[in-house]
Image (cartoon, rainbow, N blue to C red; front, side, top):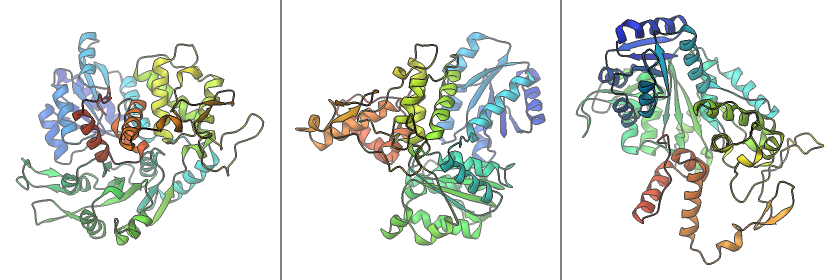
Length: 471
């Protein structure tokens, strides 16, 4: 756990740092947000920032987003100033911590961040087998390729492997290869020198150097351009990188984990992915099962997300009702855990009962039935085939009887492919509460493709859902 503390606060904030050190965190202190950004760009990574409310929190968070630095920000101030706390939250801080610091509160904040980064729920036999393999290979130095459909928890598994490895005390750095434009990804990975290209106003340490003595996750590596794949292969083999605009190699010691939701062997056959890089990454393959093949985990995951978003929205916890549990396990979850998370976020916001009721769980149109879900009289099937639509133009009612679906095939007649695609994209984005990354994963397209289509819709005067969190 790496904590960055920003500000002075009459010495109180340094007390918070001492408490964090006692709890096992690594602490770096910066005088102000400008110094903090400079430290982050020069490789002083952090998992969490605690910032004095007197600092320019909104500008700091905007700068982090512009530099593609993903880190939760906690505001802190002297006393329980409600106005300052509300302002900090409005500016983007995840939480407000009053000072002088309370040891138990600081410990709880650190524990919450650590749990959010590495929580693993794996009660289902299919998932237990995967975790057993991960436990076996985690202490090694082998590169690992984690595969599975979008939303199956590949990054969580990566964090789990890191935490179980000999590098657990080192940094865990993740790079989303699909979310970063091609012309910036090389700089993101290897860093750049001042003046290396337009906009390079200073030196920036790349993710390889930032991950030194730790683990580097290359998320959705299948999206990487073939020219950059060659440079990546060399960096992995030679254990050194060269910053853009420099001729000097820098030695790095990192363990590489990579994820993909595509069949990389087919990508190799098509010439889209280098064969030598594929074999270099695929020393160990961990294949995550889709959520529909983990029926015993669905309810527990649903309750976990319900608790998480109840706390995030200042609401009391709600236990899932029996009908709600049945509704979750009967659904096919094409978007996997990510779709379940968004569904439970929405459900906790609109629930009106003491227990979380089935009516608050809104599922996508054209419901997929989960054939792996246990029936009332039988245990879960481990060999069920992937879920299929329940008939053309029909869906299941909760009683299990076929009813006409007004959104079925008949309603598509007379519409263009472009219109159907547009409605599907907009509806999926609404379902994901405006989160573009989640929507792109559910749709099976890159974030770049989704962004281009949404921009085109905006140009046509079509309203595009936005995320409350800016995702």
